[in-house]
Image (tube, rainbow, N blue to C red):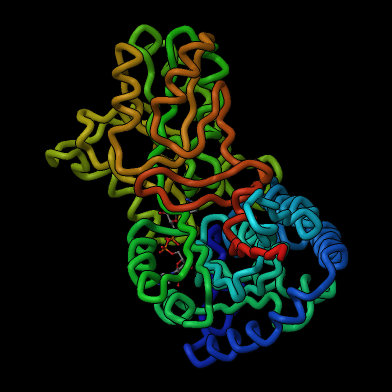
Length: 458
Ligand code: NAP
């Protein structure tokens, strides 16, 4: 059994069973058995089922959100958005079963056509930071394409995924089509990755575990989609609307207490605007309301665990600079005392780009700000990282926005905005931020094999 704690109070929420490898094998066998009937469901009927699933999720948005507040410490506003996002992703992919188009290719001697076929059983491994959306981005397109799904939530945050599986059954998904298996990564996750009947793994989590999964998958030439870490840059040019850039910067990094792979945790500001930008940023950060995530007017809740809080602290305190020297805190907000895994939103000024706070993924409410001189330096600094997931460019110069967007090595960029994810557009990383794309039409393709069939005309 695993105890789920409320990160805001450290109280026990509930106990959840931790499954073993034999139970994973049984679930995969059920998913294999459910496959032929599921892929044979008429496209319009599969579409109807997914729409019904979306409607059932919609009817339970508040319940799912409250579960995420208690079990993952998400603010109630964010948690409602996240549950609504699962509904929207299901709705979006409900259109897919009737649009899984193949092609007819001109060839000599007959007719050539391609079909898009499901892969079979898809294993989805989800991290603790966004338990609902990341689950939905995997299971919605996988199911729409005719696959069956076995999903492992993070051990710390299994509650909403377990509830979503119940809601799927309530909506009419046949047994074995969508199963959620709580348990440890080293047991349930590992068995899904190595199981010969699991044809694809969708993994979201750390680059370390993702790399291991990629190696293991190679043995079976298993398909993988990896969504890994990030160290994204928020690039602010002096000609930008500085007020807009500064007022939206906190949400771009402190949302979900910074436990966001898309967090813009490095802010690069052109030297002429640097002092003014910090002046504008300070009141935004100090005004953030950090506290009980169940309260509707709270901006930021706790971190997921004591271990995560201590890790975050380690990037800022006690000689955390690259040379063992201090990291300068420019300013910070407040955080509650007492039980709960709290850390205040914190803005630091690194002394060197070698400082761990500048180089490594903090995955907490800490942002580092550095000045740059010109466009070339901004691009070089933005790209000086092993990651390439997200980022923003703030400028009024459209040509510059285009040049910089092309030059930054990142899967998702936004201009004059901090947004990263829309369910209809591709999401994923360059470099060590991942492999493949989720969401939009690209994800749907990744859950199918292309079969080419030639019909002779003689
Ligand atoms: P993690 O330790 O890599 O865990 C992610 C998931 O993998 C959890 O369900 C975990 O199970 C499981 N797991 C652990 N070891 C495994 C193994 N050997 N085989 C198979 N599965 C295994 O990452 P995390 O700490 O939960 O999440 C934080 C990381 O996720 C950050 O680096 C963040 O950037 C990244 N992330 C990326 C994206 C993106 O879309 N690019 C989105 C969100 C998060 P347990 O729960 O039992 O540990």
